Every structure is written in structure tokens, then in C-alpha cells.
Amino acid sequence: MAVQDRRDRSEEQDSTPLWQRLERPARAPRMPLSPERIAEAAVRIADTEGLDAVTMRRLASALGVAPMAAYRYVNGKDELLELMVDHVYGELELPAMEAADWRQITRVLALRLRDVLLRHPWVSRADWCGPTPNQLALLENALAALADNRLDADTSMSMYSTVTSYVRGAVDSETGLKQMLRTRGWSSHEEARLELAPQMQWLIKTGRYPMYERYLREAARKDDTQWQFEIGLDSVLEGIAVRLEADRAAREA
Image (cartoon, rainbow, N blue to C red; front, side):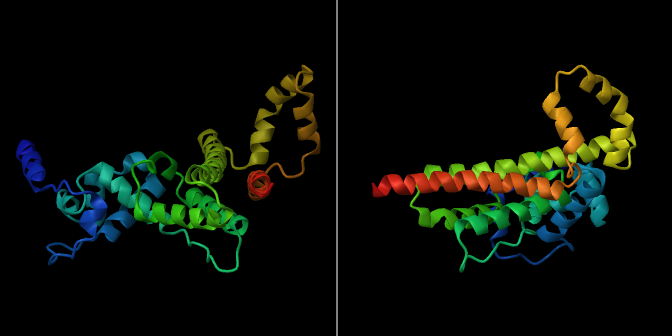
């Protein structure tokens, strides 16, 4: 029976790209499903149980349909991941372009992207699955904000990638720390510091890390991840602004 199921599924699958298929006029429904319902259910599983828990069979159970039902919309796990990622990026409200410069728009995009990725930490493992409409909408918005700076296409894309790489790296660090706290059963950063204090004290007493020792003594925002993120983001944007000004000056010379 399993062999026959796979053969039947293969015969029913459409090799047309996912997003092109979903643009087609809807056929008369044979089941109470839609791409939106599928994405919502899969995202809910990933949020609560982790990305590895998302399987076609687990999804069917959550939706209350037959195991093969979702294959009417997606050809397998890879396309399901595309639907999930697109659904998540659809939560990101794009800023209005009117009366705002590239720096304001890029900053807002970065802050909103961080919020979305923190709500769905599994996305960092899944959002290289392929371009989706909502991912490209974010990219389009960011590139449009940079358009007035007379940049070539390669430079514009590199600047966008620099900002999003910063966002992803900061989010991965933050979610990694949260995962470490959960794994070790620590309820807060303060509890983690207390548990790690003997090891840290020994390392500091070696005298090899004077700058880090200063940080431990003087830092007042060790747990303020929002502030830390925004300081880093502003530094990235300032670096881009300096580069843009230098390019402008060179053009006008």
C-alpha cells in the first residue's frame, strides 16, 4: 500500500513552481484546505515543537485531514517550508516609503525583521529554502529605499545583505542564549551568571582578559538585548552612510 501511495502521489504532483501554481484560479475545493491553513498549522507546530516536528503526517493530523491531503497544494517538505517561511515574512509590515530616507526605512525594516525572527526562531534554519513573495517584498522595499543614492545593483544588494546578516547574527546569538538557559534549566541571565561564577572567576584571575573583566565590572546593560541590538544596528547603518557619502563626494569631485 505504501508503494502504491507513493506512485499515486508522484503521478498527481505538478512540477510547476509552487508560487506559479498558487497564482492559478482556484479549482472547486475537494477538501477544507488552503495554502494559508496549511502554512498556519505548520508554523504553529514549528513554534511550539520545533522545525523537526513538522512532517507531512504531523501536519495532516493537526489539520484533521488525510495524510495525503496537503499534497494537493505542496509536493513535499521543501515546498511546505517555502509556504511556512512566506507566511512568517508576511507578518512583517513594510514601512511607508513617503517622507522617509533610506536610513529610516532600513532601520525600521531591520527592527521588524528581528521581531519576526525572534517570534519564530526556527526560521533561520528554513528561510534559505528558496525565494518567496513576502521575502522578495522585503528585499524590494529595502532596495527601493537605497535607489536615490545612485548605487550600482551589486552595491545596493551588498548593503542590504550586510544589514540582514547583522540582524540574523544578532537573533541567532539571542536565541542561542535562550536555548542554553532552557537546556540547563536556568530561569534568568542572573541565575546563569551565578551558576557560572566559579568558572568565570578562575578565568578572570588568570589576568589574561583585562578588557572583559572591565566589561563585567562596569557594564550596565548586560541583559538589555533590545538596546544592544539597536546600538549595533545604528553602527552598521552609520558605516553604510559614511560609504554613501564618500561615493557621493567622489562622483562630485
